[in-house]
Structures are given as structure tokens and as C-alpha cells.
Length: 260
Ligand SMILES: C[S@@+](CC[C@H](N)C(=O)[O-])C[C@H]1O[C@@H](n2cnc3c(N)ncnc32)[C@H](O)[C@@H]1O
Image 1 (cartoon, protein in one colour):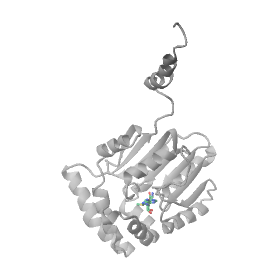
Image 2 (cartoon, protein in one colour; image 1 turned 180 degrees about the horizontal axis):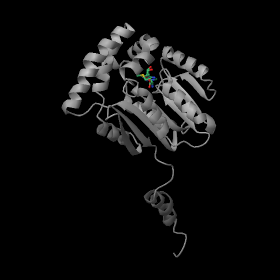
Image 3 (cartoon, helix red, strand yellow; image 1 turned 120 degrees about the horizontal axis):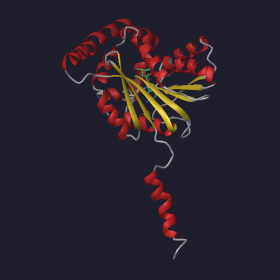
Image 4 (cartoon, rainbow, N blue to C red; image 1 turned 45 degrees about the horizontal axis):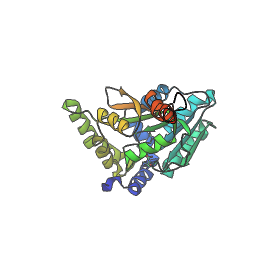
């Protein structure tokens, strides 16, 4: 594991920047992050009394949006993160917004303390690239989703090449660390560029989701593709026709209960 992906180091880094995280997030994204989160919530077609997990919830901006949307539907949201300092800021927002249908808990995305098939949807905003083993993180999401449930993964998306790629690199490698250090007083923002620039391009990440076992992967480019929302479904429990033949009909035929 690269040293910068060490979980202890990631946790310390987010603990350090937690007090300035929201301000920097909105400032550095020119407030676009708010609309990206709203788009994420709007893209989930959730049933009445839905249960949703927002993992790597940080200061709970997405979890709060989800809880607001689900309140009239009687649904509930759990936000989890392994950095208590980030959750503490989220908890203040939850109380201020009087959201009884939102709960925030300390938990590692690689070992989620929830039963299999528990959630109708799981969301992750700007978190999966920070998880030290993203593949294992996606497997955990798959485990806790109900069959047919949806994962929504919001991430920055490095353009593959050309002028946009160059602009992306200059912004993330040169501009952002300087502003981040200046506002937060921490060198933690020096880590962000690598995690963003090294993240798979959107086509590659969609393929990765399929390799992890998701199906029906859909991609929405947000703000000219600066960020990308991936929606992916956990395969439904229903047997497909080939499985019905192999697992149900063939054993019955083998028993040959008629005609012989
Ligand atoms: C960039 S922040 C994103 C926060 C929030 N989702 C948002 O949209 O602003 C990434 C968060 O992921 C959390 N994180 C990273 N690895 C984690 C893991 N293995 N388990 C739980 N949380 C993790 C960090 O603590 C941090 O709060």
C-alpha cells in the first residue's frame, strides 16, 4: 500500500483539516459540490421508508441532503466515517436541521457494522478514492445493499488527455495545495492532487464496478465532466432463465419422475 494511503495517515489528515473542510470544499469547488450532491440525491429513485447508507460521510453534507429528501417518505439515513472529528461537524448540522431520521456513526468502510442486504441504497461522495483498498470498499457496499439496490458514487474525474487534462493537473497539483495550506494551515491538501489525478478515468472506473459485481452501471458527467456520478445496481436476487434451467429444472429432470 502506498504510504499516502495508510488508513491511520488518512484519518489523521482528515482530523486535522476537519474544522476548515466545509469552507475549503465549497470554496475550492466554487460551490459546485453542493449541486453535485443534490444531483446525487435526485438521481436515486428511493422507495417509501427507504434505508440509505452514506459511507465516508465526512461532515455529512450528502447525508443531510439525503435525510431531508427522505423525511417525507418516512425513510432513514445512516452516515458513517472513521474520522470522529469530521462526524462531529456533521452531528452539529444534523441537530441544527432537526433531522431525526439521520444517524451518524464511527465505522470503517472496509468493515461496515451492518447486516447483509440491509440498505436500499449506499452513497459515497469523494470518499472511495481515499479508502486504502477501493475494491474491498466496493465489495462491502455490495454486501450491505439489498439485491436490486443502488450504489451512487460521486468522484472527481480526471480527463484522459488534452488541454482539459493539463488544466485539471495544474489546478489540483499547483493551485489547490497552496490555497488548502493557506486556509487550513495544514499540508494535508498536498495529498489531494495525487489521490484525484491517480483515480481511474470514468470509463475505467465503470469497468471496475462491473468487475466488482455491480450491474447496470450508468455514468453522468457533472460540470463538463469535472465530477462524475456513477450509479450501479446490485444484481437482483431473482434467478435468470439460464439459472432457472441449471439450478431448478435440471435437478428435477435428473430425478426423472415420469415417463420411464
Ligand atoms: C474527502 S472526504 C469526503 C466527505 C464527504 N463524503 C463529502 O462529500 O464531503 C473523505 C472522507 O472519507 C473518510 N474515509 C476514508 N477512508 C475511510 C474508511 N476506510 N472508512 C471510513 N471513512 C473513510 C475520511 O475520514 C473522510 O471523512
